[in-house]
Length: 574
Image (tube, rainbow, N blue to C red):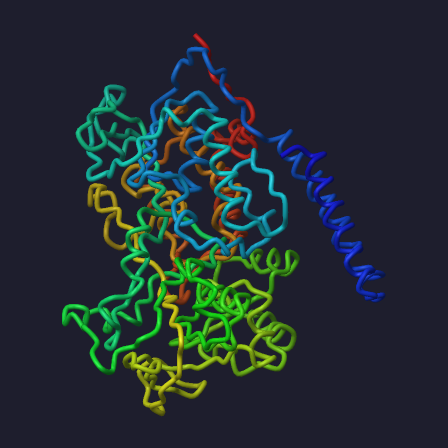
């Protein structure tokens, strides 16, 4: 979309809004300075994006020219991270092949319902410099549209292998390494994918994300025939969602999932209404929710969005059944950036300031929803502005408890008090429901196709993405569990260019000992972090890692313009 058309669309939105306010006699809305500020901000945002694109968009290789390859890179996964990394590598003269198990682009975004959108402001979700957003919080189809546009613009169609599941990544001795494969001497292996029919690769980028297929939990009392069939058949592959807000698999429900082996068929007491997974909830007909009570099982980002979808569809009431409490922070660019600037990705001595601020401002009137046992920097927060007001107004009821079974009329729940943990004794209650939405997350993706010796016990990944035993294997946005602002942003290009630098310059390559020292240092700095030292990290922490990575190695300084901005390395034409 051109800058002129974006500005024209913003002007039309503002004019339409003002005309509507005037025709309805709403003087306060018509004269609202806030609407004017939002309109001006939208124009400024459109212009800023164009400036960013002009300055940092990587070169697009000529269509019919022969490019001398600087090296070969395999990318596993055609989601946001995979397509962005492939576009960066190809734009700098590297030969790229993308492997995607499904028949489409998009990863987790291709599976999300149509009402899903970014939780973080899109200025924090610029997964590639060529991306231009039309609004601050774009929805699924615009995200997939931009992803597809980057894929086509960088001529990746012929380099993508759809319907190919990667089952093995195996070493092939590198002819350049004098001592054959010897990572301790800065060497590396070449790699073959599956049967090696595409030749050998100098590096592999694993971009399968952290969320795979929709995770259905078969609670007792769930009828055999449900919407699970349609949901599962439409879900296929993997990757990154909504800037950290996406639900991770619900470990707390594993004991229920084990009961699936009993093949619960339901019976007289089975639930008789429609059951949806949150990823397919927008496939519901309006009659399924209009004027009805919708029960949402789960408390993460997809659960909150399911409540929004149901109420927007005319549901009379929503009831959220939460096994554990999640922190919910507002959709505020300034606040989100400040939280992402928290160093070391953990609860710090002054962390109570954030906690008190959120309690008094965002949770005003619904303080009973504040998580009692952990702070906002111990797990990924949900970013949402509408859910807490819905609870305040009584449109959504929040019930804390453990699901026991579904009944013909709803859900039988062990309802607990606020200061309690999952499994604690509570009061048994039957929650009435006309429609049930399972916001139970997604199954974790697997990287079992990689050699096991790449991940020595007791060591996390180097710089959170590179294999400890071989820098030429990178798990891009596929290894972390929680974070704030660490998905779908400019770090995708930075990490990809670090890998490209290591391929081009032998002297910059880290040895296995270098990488282990880095992990030891991180363990020292983040000692005592909840859930592990690298379970959660913020954007400023990621930035600090990358800064120290260069500051301590003068031989890498000359590559700084390339790493940060993509400047200085162009395709070489034959």
